[in-house]
Amino acid sequence: MNHADADTAALPLVTFILLTYNQERWVRAAVEGALGQDYPNLEIIVSDDCSSDRTFEILQEIKAGYAGPHTLVVRQTERNCGSLLHAADVAGIARGRLLVLAAGDDASKSHRTRVLHDAWKKTGAWGLSSRFDSVDEEGLVLTEGVQADVIESHGFEKFFVAGSGPVRVVHGCTSAYDAQLFRHLHLDESDYILSEDGALSVLVNLLGKDIMHLEDSLVLYRQSSSSLTNNIVRKVLTYADVVRDEKNIERFALSQANRCRLFLRMNEYLGDARVRSVSVPGVTEELRRQEVKMNWFALSPLSKVASLIHGRVEPRWALPRSFGRPLFYFLKSLASRLN
Image (cartoon, rainbow, N blue to C red; front, top):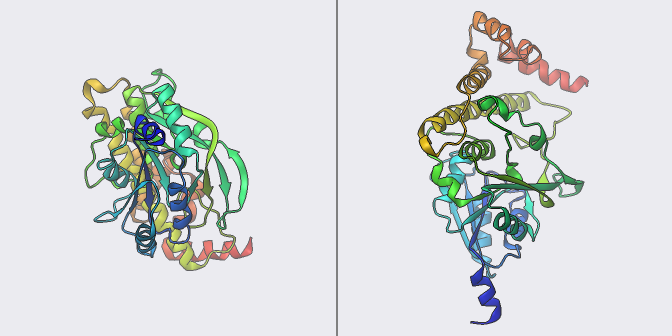
């Protein structure tokens, strides 16, 4: 064994997990970022959540042509299951002690895994995230060294019993986790949740483990009109755009409601492993908010009024949607053309 091989063997295996879904336009750059990592003892798992575009075909092409130093696995889920179930599915086959997560529309800088590994080894944190550079759809850097808003103003305190201590969260696009965390994550097929970072952050807090934020900027974070959580608002919306956007709002509300149900389950099943407690009233109220938003067009007029009175939806969101889908879709499309 030469010195380079000995140095590699001395480092713990890290798994770089790249999760993709309908990102054919940017997935090559995302995979190139993964394959370009300079951490030597690295397993890379690129997993597609049953994309309807060419994303998985592109991944297979890249796999067929790859002859680099890292272990590369390309696979696909059996069905579209959402980010949290997808991440947990891959974590179940990952061999690394540290799991670095990435999305198929972002790109990781070459030293990302190495910096995260060093911080994890030094601190023992179970959740880590960093700053990022914001880029546009063409990859042009818009802002460097951005600290995610969720780090400072995440609002997750309402999910925990008051006075139980500060709450910290992990920013999804820059996240990494100790692999042990996923042993405490018990999911079922109904847990369709579109953003894994919120659920995993709550789990880390319940277990009383540390979350660390690095000042290094390690990811090129894509601003795009197709993203549910990081989109650029279109100036002009067609009727079809509005219909699609409303379906996405309902889908995201379903995801958030499922996340609340998971928080309540976590509070029960963790048992003695739980260091902190979920605020059942706080989570339940958030669940009700999301259920109202998810089912708004199907609610009776009385239920809509009650939801407004109880503050479960904002009037500026609810009132324009109170006259039925077709009229709302038309008026929103028209308004976008007049702005």
